[in-house]
Length: 423
Image 1 (cartoon, one colour):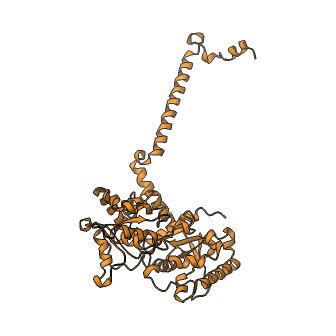
Image 2 (spheres, rainbow, N blue to C red):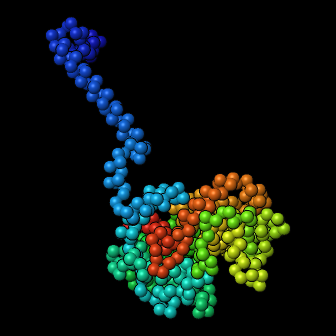
């Protein structure tokens, strides 16, 4: 096409001057309409863009009420949700969906003296394992129809095996034979190679008993007590089970900051490197109450537990197996837990923002521990303590289970895991 023709093509009647056409009024009207439409489109785009970024600021009260609040129970829930959660509204809505839909199938096979049994007791360091076994059976999450199940529970009670005097070697054989029998008898494992299966165990007994079956450890979801990353724990797959020594000897603490005059407290066995250092550096300090062993019972009834009531910050160093009930003891008694451990996956860490109710340190911080705690402003301490009271319900086991308690939080973590499983 020639240059002359291009100029001729670019000069249609709509672009001529007003004096060159008899249709000038129509042209002006059309141009005005187009300009108005463009402005309205731009304004609409800006409005909806801002609305998507800040929905609470632009949504009408009627819309917000209709969308998010459906009952008096929801009103009560909204009041308790705060920034102690990573995503408060997401947690509330997803929790409600979990309660309405989540189903778990429990395998019924195996030696009744070893499997599908509540562990020997619901006390001591195995209490969390025992409560979960009991809670899952009496909860509405359980289904007898495997075709309706989102996840499959393998009821391996290493606690019961240990109580029967079974050696670790024989435990491994029992676990292996049992799981292999489930794989051969049922079709469900092979659909995902066990990715939609889980087992629950507390302390190192269950961890050691399952080590001999790599396909169970690597494929299925492990719900284990207070694990560390350096013992094979996979954070995005496995779930940290809170180790809770129930029943608690004394009532829950909280809203009692005026009684907390001791800066920091720890008493326990020196069964790990960090505990040895902690005791050596601080056991003679006048502001940190650090003892090389548990408080002798002869010195007073429940003196150890009562010390939690008097202290602002309770030191929680990793033990020989990293796991410890000290964080949950601290939470129950209203003492801010100071996590002093490397590679530690805290219970419900993907739900709760631990930094809002605890002090998170690494082991190298032990040498500056006193100054770190003293540098925390009193206003920040008050906020940590207030938030600590809010999370206490999440670290309490009940029978039957209660909404938002430790059992429901574990189930919620499992509910989150099941969404990534495809088959």
